[in-house]
Amino acid sequence: MSHNDSQAIRLDDPEIAAEYLNTAFSVGDQDAFLKALRDVAKARQGGVSGLARDISTNRSALTTTLSKGGNPQLRRLTAVLAASGLALTVRPARKLGAAAAKQLKSK
Image (tube, rainbow, N blue to C red; front, top):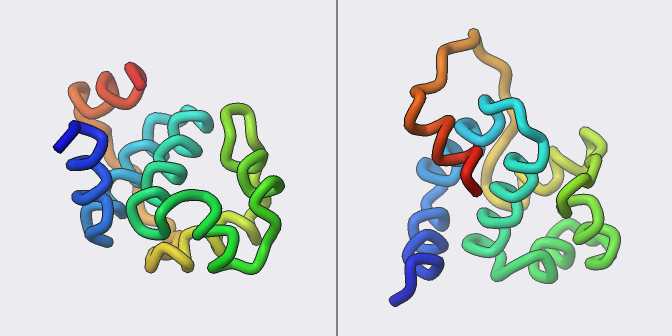
């Protein structure tokens, strides 16, 4: 089993996927967050095609939205999260551990 396969398996768990996305979001790098969304889509829906089908949208448009430099609207973001069994929430800010921040910046 490759590293990518094991990562996809872990991201299939909603608790782990949520923590992964929260960590990516807390770094403040939109491209890192969009990559994390793609990783979760791969693990939970088999990729962007499955995710697009689940949220009834065009695969090509969703690929563009989730690509590096993409700029998803809130409506699309909440649909992607909901299809993955997740939801967007707001909570008090906390500091991100240096190791987690470094890990996300290196991707």
